Length: 245
Ligand code: HEM
Image (cartoon, rainbow, N blue to C red; front, side, top):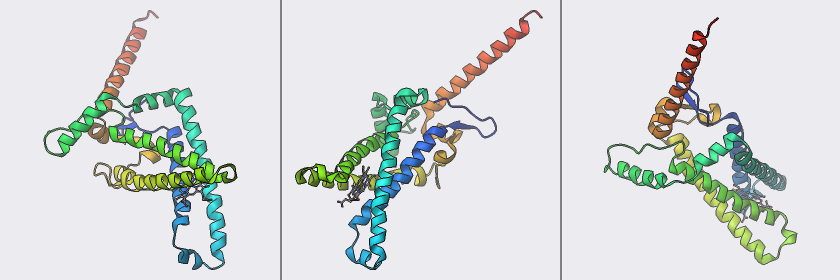
């Protein structure tokens, strides 16, 4: 990612506008899918307490679940194309790939958290936890989309396959909801380094202090890149001054 610093605020680019739009579509549609999906698991008396409106609410529930599913499928497809055809996307997926260093970071971080190591390991653009989270979304989406599409087109499938897809859909939906509520909410909200909220998903920026704390290796690389650019710029200016007029 082309990280740039703004001299006054000392921030770096964490998420570009394109990435923020993908993220907002993903989280709004996933939120709606969780809400409208788990409504089916509610107690019967809750639905009955709405009287006649219960049927209308549940009719809309089905429509919203399907509309949000279409949005989530679209953004997943877009993301697949994005990581292949755009320079920004290729850099994203390259930096997201697991490396041996992630295993080292994990052990060093555990050692740090348990008091066996004085310093946190210097982590790169994406920490091992962020990579796990990212690829779990790939896995989870693959499961809910294939099983969801099967349930949507239930007339095409034998009951045996439909029973399996329903079980997988519910299982993965529960896992995804828990992962988002427990994992993601902790990392972007309750993590003491960012509390009350990591605003990168809104403004795309990461502060210099957070860069140093959580992505020290990436920070050092970005600073070295900026110094190199500055020295190239200076050399260009000097050679222009030396030209005979
Ligand atoms: C994070 C994503 C999703 C979550 C959390 C979720 C959640 C749920 C839940 C909890 C159920 C009830 C299952 C049961 O009664 O056993 C359900 C049903 C269903 N889901 Fe999803 N779902 C998601 C994505 C999708 C997608 C992508 C599709 C379509 C491609 C889809 C289509 C369906 C269908 C057709 C049903 C059957 C009930 C109905 O007619 O609405 N879901 N979903």
